[in-house]
Image 1: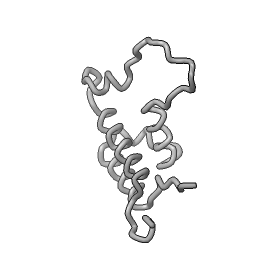
Image 2: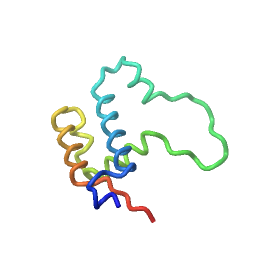
Image 3: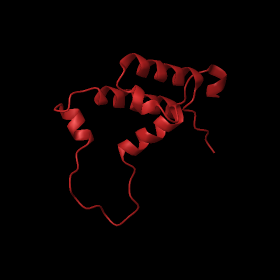
Length: 99
């Protein structure tokens, strides 16, 4: 249905917004709170159940779908990063088919 109206699915939109925010935080200074929180290690133990996905794992998956090799190199160049995200949105690269 989404393909017929050429709009990104909610999954694509979430993935693109997650990558957009990741790029924004990566370009922040090291002493900024959002960047410190992103890489913070709380030092607590997890429960014995299945490990939950971390935000960084989801970003890594979104990045692999966008561009296999160079997406992490482009994050520090704002114009290249915006171009990559725009290209992903236009091509629907982040499309994850529902089964």
